[in-house]
Amino acid sequence: MKIGIHDLEVATSHYVLDLDTLAEHQGIDPNKYRLGLGQDAFSMPAPDEDIVTMAAEAAQKLLARHDVGQVRQVLFATESSVDQSKAAGVYLHELLGLPANVRSIELKQACYSGTAALQMAVNAVARNPEEQILVITSDVARYALDTGGEPTQGAGAVAMLISADPHLVEIEPGSGFHTSDVNDFWRPNDSTTPFVDGQLSLDAYLNATTSAWDDLAARRALHLEDIDKFLHHQPFTKMARKQLVALGEHTGTQLSEDLIEESMSYNRALGNTYTASLYFALTAQLHSNDQLAGKRLGFFSYGSGAVAEFFTGVVQEHYRDHIYPDHVAQQLQDRVALSYDEYRGLHQAYAATSQTFSTQPTTNAPFRLSGVTEHQRRYEAQ
Ligand code: CAA
Image (tube, rainbow, N blue to C red; front, side):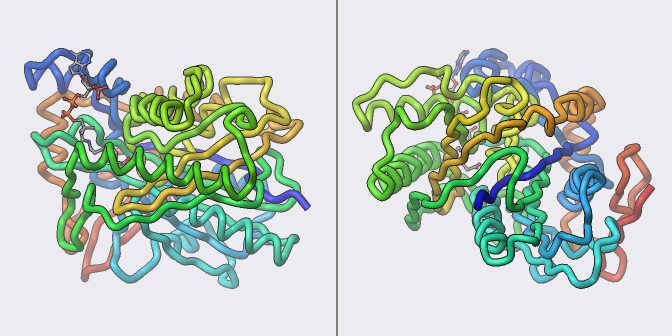
């Protein structure tokens, strides 16, 4: 029985900052961001947006095409959680009208946990093939102002439906793993922005993903030639290029950038979306190539701290009949450009999840965060 990604949808936030604007005010060459990091812009949430509103928007579009009665679990993966106890997916039950007899949990391991959610869902469907699982990856990457991480911010969500006989990608059994205790990027419970050791994070990423490849290659007797396209967690798209070079050097193979080129278009425009980044890479890959049927995709998932997984999937025969590139184009095009001062003001006004506040409607997105009262987050459909 084939099990995998049956369908997916995405959402991003209301605002966007062009990185030329940031470079200009920092007095640096814009090519540092465009070429050096491989990024053009990043999405930024309005005060009434967060991981829940983006996830609900993506999931609503996705579920409109399916029988919600078959969904048995919501697995919500995020780095930028809004509560230490309550799973973000529980809010979706009310917003999307999900049945009460659906299980909801949240998963955490920096940018990696979306992959853990996906694999948990595949395993659950293997036991109960008639069930479907909603996997959510949703994050707001928010670094402190005037730090090295600032140009690598971003926001976005990918909602995926995992089922038997999937329309898009069969996830193949067998993964390579790597875990090592490294302080490259972390966020204490009371901090709204992460701490990061930039150079260490690059080294940890390359070490972990190469090690995960080695693990899988040994376990499944897999060779680089068995992979038709590679997809990466893309904190900035240049990172995928760096990984490809490192993997080539590690294996003594010359790897063409054609293996990754098509996977980077959405992340260039969105910035880092943490758990969702790998799945935006998948979305971009599926949308930009109509010759993928039967091709094997290799997925490099990385979460600082650090955990990595390498796994593979096979694109299904009629995948082109089940993709919606115009939806992504619309999301990107609808974003409202921020001036530098507006961006700084929005960043500084960000409310910690323990604060009481109310918001004005900013967007025409289907869901909004109306504020926090009595320490409870209030969401509404609009
Ligand atoms: N024209 C073209 N390229 C230029 C340039 C110019 N004018 N000026 C600089 N560059 C190039 C540099 O040569 C460099 O390229 P290489 O790495 O290929 O040599 C690139 O631009 C970046 O320059 P710096 O290394 O000087 O950049 P920086 O010190 O300002 O920081 C960073 C870069 C470490 C990625 C920083 O943005 C950061 O800390 N980001 C957050 C952490 C992160 O994203 N880490 C990634 C791995 S961890 C992970 O993946 C998990 C996660 O999501 C956080």
